[in-house]
Amino acid sequence: MSFIPEEYQINSLINQDTYLVNGELKQWTGQTTPVFSTISSTEKYSPTLLGSIPFMGEKEAAEVVEGATNAYDMGQGLWPTMKVVDRIKCMEKFVKQMKETREEVVKYLMWEIGKSLGDSQKEFDRTVEYIYDTIASYKELNGRSSHFEKVQGVNAMIRRGPLGVVLCLGPYNYPLNETFSLLIPALIMGNTVIFKPAKHGVLCISPLLEAFRSSFPKGVINIVYGRGREVASPIMKSGKIDVLALIGNSKSAIALQDQHPNKNRLRLILGLEAKNPAIILPDADLDLAIQECITGSLSFNGQRCTALKVLYVHESIAEEFNKRFSEKVDSLLFGNPWEKGVALTPLPETDKPKYIQGLIDDALHKGAKVINEKGGKHTDNYIFPAVLYPVNKEMRVYHEEQFGPVVPVLSFKDIKEPLKDMAESNYGQQVSLFGKDIKTLAPLIDALVNLVCRVNLNSSCQRGPDAFPFTGRKDSAVGTLSIPDALRSFSIRTFVASKDIDYNNEILQELLNSKESNFINTDYIL
Image (cartoon, rainbow, N blue to C red; front, side, top):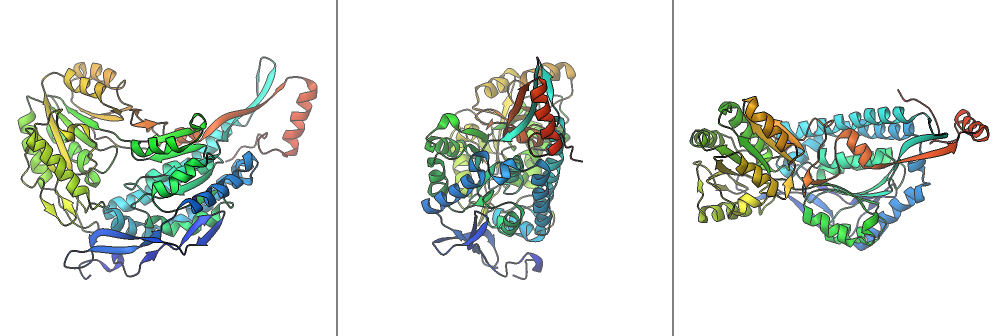
């Protein structure tokens, strides 16, 4: 392992032999599943064993449901009735402990999902920042609610209350940042949570288990492991889940919804697939457009819901764009995550190269060409990004969310063509628009904002900043995930009202003065 820097070598395995339920890190003695990295730690290629996780089933599902349900206790539990300031203190305790795990978590982000060192560090730091920003936003939200309103002779104190028990399922591509964009607001708003880490990026959660255990009251956060059908399905079948919070595949979301016996009572907060296009107009700055499309389509190998997954290039500049774009793609450096200057890293899913090759073969069969020299070349744990042109609607790569290193390019003559395609698409998250002439841009922007939820002018599609809305139309999302929106998504407006008469007003005043109620108070949290 001499070619791997010492600080990133795997010298001991993480055999995750505990799970968090009802405030206890409970020992697991049952069946386990090995966790491998597609990155080799030997000169001759071989996947690296990183450790193991529990393979859980119905018994453990019932156990965590009971833990979370008891902690919520029909809204009477310690956590949902706790003062806002005290819930914030618990969250601050958690993030303080979390920061101490940075080195270990970053290391496992690299090994488990192949994310580059810089991006792994960025994901960790951004998640910490996200938690602090959520706390600040919650203080602001609470401050705006800390008063009585009088309307038509009725006094009311309106606050946001928790929804109940949340099942949280995060994605493998951002096992911290995206997962915590569900987990943190769900917790801080007073809900109790069952969390199952994704199939990849699961061991990077292990260093955080003690922080979760020691920071929150028992049963507030419960963490289980295993396959969705073995664990998540029985959790949903219990009928005791109030909110399904999932970032991932719509098929999984639909399957889980169908398991719930009272679907009309189930709140959904979902981040799903996207097929974000780039539209490159004739007057676009090609240098800028190409650079942004490189980043947009191939950052983290295109394994992002916000990735650019199809490029529409005006026919007048298509030849020049394709030539320069292909050269740029071929110049990208492939290597292990800790290597300096790498832009492309090993794919965490062993079957992904085969899947991408299938998309390439289908496109070639239906008239496309691989227009970059290195496109489609295989290594033991990678397939080099293929730029495909000309792509048409008969091809799988046009319709499917590739979530990997292949870039389909279409040319267009009339702007109505990509607009029509976007309108007919099942997805509607974001678009990147490249051009300069405002006479052209203005009507385009006005049309695009009604087809997607974010128009990126001369820049790639992206998630952040976390204060901005993150959502989608059609099959791309249910609910909005940004810091202020997520706090609202995981809560409901609830209030205490009384007629404006002396008898009631005296009682309200006594409640305020005594501070007996955690709900009826006007405390301001600095």
